[in-house]
Length: 233
Length: 233
Image (cartoon, rainbow over all chains, first blue to last red; front, side, top):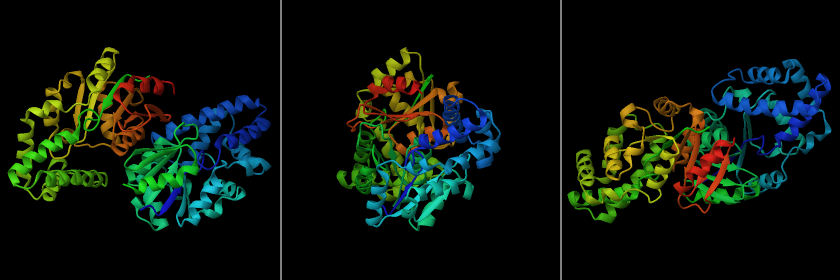
């Protein structure tokens, strides 16, 4: 029986493309490079960084990825950090949540589930993401919030899921982890013995069982249904 | 660009339930237990064994799982081995392939893909499965056939996918692995940097992209289409 729901953050709760657009504007202002060039570079760097991290790079979690992004953007890591700080002071920071998030968190919370956040970080610390979630009125729903830079573990490692389950006080098989990444979220969870829900908002399929321990959904509104389905095993 | 296709075996190419039914008949004959009882026990033991193996048990690959199954079936490991040997001498052993297998292997081979087999084993050695594939006229399509008992590695470990890619002479990202298990096949592959296709013949969805590096299909006939889709990344 599932007792706790763990959430990935970017592209699951918060729209990373909206945040990267603000960051790109700030970098463009500082560096004088056109916004579309900066924006293309940052998304390209992100795709490459995801791959590189899976290959086991970025051991120094924040520093290595900041150097990676800064070098690809043609700026210094210091300029990159300044752009992030400028971004979280931008008023649009309160519009980062997908429209299916708050009502789903509300529903799960009132159904008695424990809720956890499990986020990998790139070039800004988890504390900044925690603040963005606070501004978006989503932080209060979570019993635990775990960021890779704060505990030195990253998804998809088995250990980070074990750590979360112990913090939530539930067994691994009593947890479901929800995220958009097949590698970090779905694969990491199921190998650790945690149930998994993959969210892909562009999928045609509202709710589909993928295997004994996994479902695919195209909106978080389907999450309670997916949890019911996974409880049937 | 995908250059090689790796296949899981049971429930992907060969119908394990058909084989377990024959094995159950042989065990029933030897032990005097009713067939339906033996058959229920063997499928239950299989589900439990999959879970236990994922938790890191069954380090002595064949011996530990043979003891596990034998104890749940109330027979000795020797009786279990004898039932397997009796089963591969049964004429129905040549009817284990799904009907979408041979034409798909033919198509992939003639399109120039290298083909690999990557199988975890339970209580019989990989050599027996290799023989079953031979009797079913499927073995000849494969450039390499890798079984966990022969190399001391098991899916979903990253190392077994690295081993296969080196044997096939392609890079990890030039490989796609096809299988029915979210844990062993999909998750193991994508974490290793290999593309993955999950086969679920009871799904309503013929071919669905699950993420950057994974697709879901409901028949192997859709595999060439899924490979084309994954090449688009």
